[in-house]
Length: 52
Image (cartoon, helix red, strand yellow):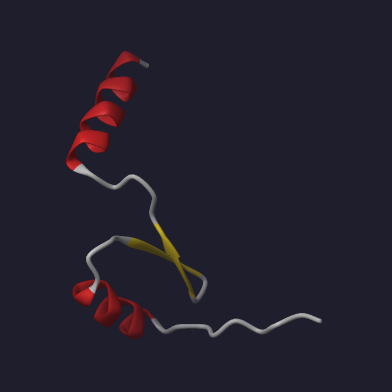
C-alpha cells in the first residue's frame, strides 16, 4: 500500500521554515530536513571545497 504524501506550496514551505528551528529543503512540493546544518559543519564544508 502506497501512502500519498502531502505536496506543499512554496508559500507553505516558507511559512514553516520561518518558524522552524532546523533547516529544510523544498523539492517538488516535498519538504526535507537538512542534516548537519550548523556553523561548524559549514566551515568544514567550506574548507573541504577550498581544498578541491
